[in-house]
Amino acid sequence: MTSIDDLADEIMAGLQEYAELADDAMKIAVKKTATSVKKEIAANAPKDTGDYGKSWTTKKVKENSHTLQMTVHSKNRYQLAHLLEKGHAKRNGGRVQSKPHIAPAEEHGAELLESLITEELS
Image (tube, rainbow, N blue to C red; front, top):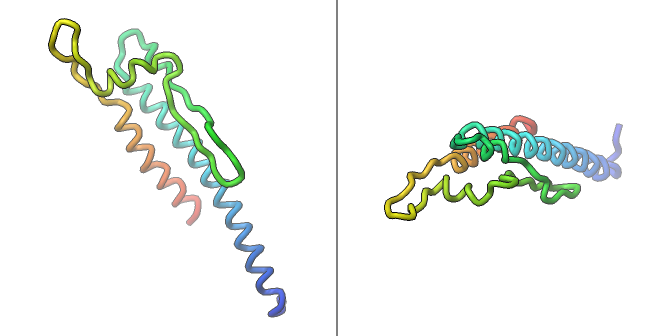
């Protein structure tokens, strides 16, 4: 049985434990989401030789005890990303049609992250 005097300490210990669990759940969700977004971009990327789709990777940008920041990027074909996503002008006139493959993966990633965190914390 907890006395009234120890109640505040017990509540703070419980809140600290919950915060640590929430931090761990968030970091796991961020890693899963980054991997999922990378796979979706690679699967939906325009295919010529296939090198562009294979060039996508995840990278941990920043991590501390409460946060994790990751990025999904093309290792060596990053120059093509904007041109393929948005389209571009041709040398002799006209335009190359856009092939959106990054924005849809980003939208799905935001939804996935939210659902994973909600699922872990409920």
